[in-house]
Every structure is written in structure tokens, then in C-alpha cells.
Length: 174
Image (tube, rainbow, N blue to C red):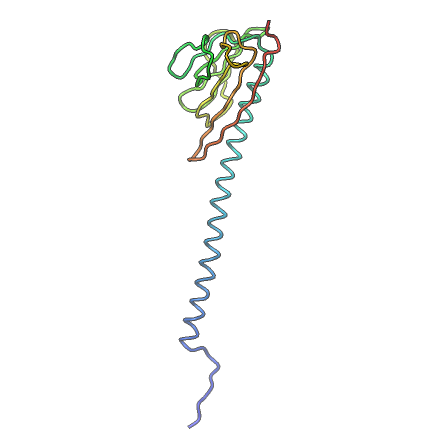
């Protein structure tokens, strides 16, 4: 009796091929998902970096032209004008040649900007602001007498946090 070669695959060959294909698909999908998660995290970091840069640019441009601090309120609603250490900002007003500028961190983690010596800031300039830390410069001076301030912006979105900092000195301080 003669065996006929039909040129097909045996069940064993199909199972081995299926196992190799499954391993290959598993490796490729793992790599794809890892890259997708990495991309999402980097996208969040870039967004936080953008908002941090907006905050620092607004502060730098306006504070540089200021004469000094008129009012500074910390997150506990305490007037901190006579403090000589860093505070977590709720609202600050700087005196300028024209009138004044107001920066205010509202409870919804947004930073607002306004103009005037009193009142509240109304123009939204940044999201994801967890906190802003202000420190008078040089060290040891009170905000009332400071020649400048150090600004640290802490931003947070979906368990990703970023922190940016700069120092700004008042040009028109007398």
C-alpha cells in the first residue's frame, strides 16, 4: 500500500504555527501599548510645560514693570505682606506705573489675571495650576520691601506633576 502525499499541514504543524504567531502578536501588541502610554504621558508633560511657560511669561512680563507688592494673600486667606519666607499663593497684587496687576489662583486649579489695585482677577491664563509659591528676594526681606520675587509654579494633570521656577526683579522699585 502506497501513502499518498497530499501536500497539506498536519494538526501539529498548525498548532506550532499558531503558537509562534500568538507570541509574535503578543510581543508586538505589548510594544504598541507601551509606546502609546509613553506618548500619552509625554503629551501631558508637554501640555503642563506649555501652561507653566504661560504662567512664568505672564508673571515675568508684568512683575518686571512693577514697583512692588501691594497685597499678597496665601491659601489660608492670611495677608502675608510682612512675611519674609515663601508662601503658597492665593492672590497677589503688584503696583505698576499705571495701576496694578492681579494674579489669583482659584480653587478649580486655574490661574487668573486682572488689572487694578483691588478686586479680583477675571481673565483665565492657565489650567492645571496646583500651586504657586512666591518667595521675596533677596532672602530675609519681607514682601513689602522686596526687590523681586522667586516664582515656583507647580502643575498637575492625571498623576503627572511638573514644577517650573524663575526669579524676577522689580525694575521700577524706588
